[in-house]
Image (cartoon, rainbow over all chains, first blue to last red; front, side, top):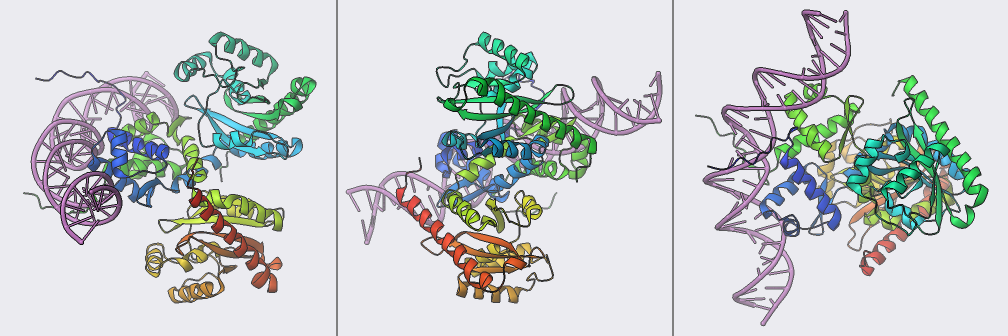
Length: 269
Length: 269
DNA sequence: CAGTTTGTGTGCTTATACCAAACAAATACC
DNA sequence: GGTATTTGTTTGGTATAAGCACACAAACTG
């Protein structure tokens, strides 16, 4: 007689679907792979991997090219769909573009999901710095503690939620100025709430500073954040503490109003 | 005794994964839905749908908001990843941007997968027309027969492949000028091969014309296509038959060279 | 505060995903 | 160029896990 593995876990969850996503993520990491290669990486029988791949090909989410299996471009269409139907994106897009045009710098619109940072929109102004860095970011999810937009969101998230997030993700160091201590972070969030905006002083990329403002709904719930990034040399003194914060918080405000308007219209299409 | 449902079908495929994607696509179509709503739409027991949703939430691809389940923003990151690692996107991006800058019109970079049209990049020049139309397209896959880029690709696909695609997708009419007959299409493709570029004369959107050129690799295999769209009033005579075709084919050429260069370098990162 | 309708949780059963092992096809090796 | 190795593909049997029906809970409706 076999001992019960006591796994009463509810809600139940589907093992087959989970391994299907494991395969997708491995294909992502390996930038395409063969059946055997995948089977080794995942420690699964070849036959199983093969059947999974056949299913994903049938679903048009995987393609076979050059003797390897790759993630298909249908993920792109799906991603675009999700983005373009996102309330914050719809409400914030034009404002982000306006601010980038006005300042000629990098402007970002971000949100949070499952404790991770997600980039909804970015516009690179004429003088923007950090291109190589930000270009890579779009395809990843990121941490919340080392950026102006991230901290702006953390500051207005319920404290329990913040605890949960730093518990799960940690506070990895990016530069020597990154906040890596729990207490310092909470102090910082307090300051942000007092100011109404967040500052990033070379905490993520050396040589760049940024100012970010939260975007809240009518119940003070965080929807996302907007931020403007500049090289440290161009973001000092009043510019860092007055002028850019004013621009960014005002943009955040416009977006908040847009969201309200959209909600009131209720007409989705 | 039960009759065997004779389904020897190989390769085998996973029913559970297929229904998981069915749920994802239904969530897409319904723009978010509840458990019961989904169960009705898909004609499945509530319990099953619930377990599937729980799995997708665990995987972070579905979120529960406002008492409804929605597709999560992780699809966005995945989509960005797939796009940014696509050879054609990497090779063609800058050239698309250059051409849009030079001409101030709409420029598109597209490819084909599973017989469907996929948009890899679009840049809207200052004078570009058709914004409302193209904005919607990015989140969909489309047909190949009613556009300059689509026809450019069809012209260089193996005939068997073309047959297969029109067999599966049909030749739906978009405007009164859309090619809807198999024979006319094959004549058109012949012309395109002779010219080296494709023209779209209000076959998709009334009032706009376009010129598209295929992007081929060293074995003459189609990788994708690039096109330029203008209002009919600005795309006539020599402009339609000489100048724009020259610009577009030359851009296609540059991209072809870029692909070759990337392949020779072999260094991916 | 009854009556619906929603989401969530649970055992049972059968379909099905998994595995092992065999086969085929392509590549590498000598 | 023929053998050996590695790859992808296929198959049958089996244990398991996905699906179903049902029950429960919780929220909304009137």
